[in-house]
Length: 263
Image 1 (spheres, rainbow, N blue to C red):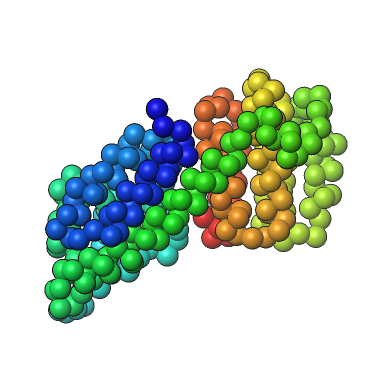
Image 2 (cartoon, rainbow, N blue to C red):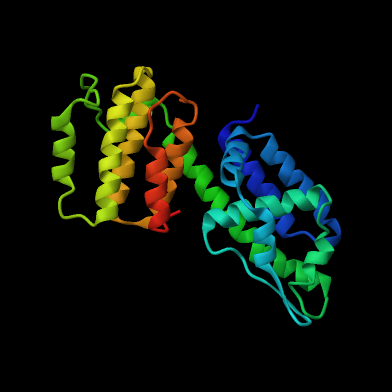
């Protein structure tokens, strides 16, 4: 069985082959990419999350546009939509619900399929590959072992705190005084998330790992770098997925990040 790093690297290798291919040989390459995704828990979980509830048909209409005889393609603006859209597009081509040659008309007005495929690869597949790699590496790096976490960051052990610990929440509110509303809200939510993790019945190693990620999450929020906030958010989202009974505030955190167009 491949490790997460190996499955991600294999995926990147196959996508590179797809990018460097010819339109005549693209379909078998697409099949290999989809197969690599389905055989990797890291990748399949990621794509399942981003495509859950995703309206691909509407995105297809918005991206492949026609004005008279002119056809053109517009890639979705948000990186998360790029990930969901391109994955869905490749699946539809793989299942033969869409024909690649029909789509290539939107990438070269002169219907030169070789040139059109090169444009398709650079415009659609290349940014998709880049974003998947960023997310994959962030998830891999964030789910390090407890021993690695202890080496990189000193962990202070505390007694579990419950939701009734008003003093803890009040201190959290004081720490965010003066912040913009959205960032202050995020910091408060992350403090509540810590309370939830500490108050859970998770093992000490799981608590340590989640607390470590939450500390980085808050650090990136305070630095106000949207791209880094987005990546650590995805890492935390992936880390808490196995813990279905955890009373997480992730839904509200997601809403705030969406309001601020971070994700």
